[in-house]
Image (cartoon, rainbow, N blue to C red):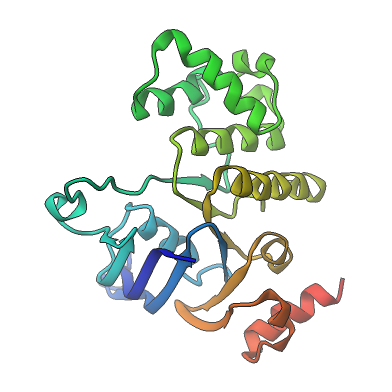
Length: 259
């Protein structure tokens, strides 16, 4: 299985708002790869740096040091290096935890899903609605949802719309940042099943960021444990998850087994 994403010795941090602007490190030499077609899980508590890592992979924040490669090409490099002749850059998209702020409340679903189609190009305006309906069908929603606004949808429906938007651009790699944690447990399972089906049908590659080991084990083929910005444990075969050694990893595992 080929390597799609490479993260090598990434360090990152922020200036504190108080205390004289002291430097606060968030990520300490994080390294891992994501294989094409897999779902890699990143698990960590609040403040572990996992969402910062997601933003770096989305190109929203450049790391202070280290390197990120998508499809073998540096993500943070001049454009002339990013687009070699004859090779297109990877398409990357995301699904976030807060579906309520992930979409413009003044746009209906048709408008929300039309935007990525038009940005991607190759779609005539008179074909947009048909393609939007196709996207909705892929995520288990019907055409009548087109005219609804975000406040008229349930949490599960709105997250399905966000997933439809994420796949509209035909991405190679999708960052799922706590994508089910704000949903009821029964809806979480439905969304996890949907994500698994889409990965198989569309050949997607996922980075699934979560604090919930149950969700990680449900969706992922491999998992990395992150604590205080450091990789403390790696599991390359989920069948060996019970053999983790680090105390924090064992604590998370025991919490799941308690249920």
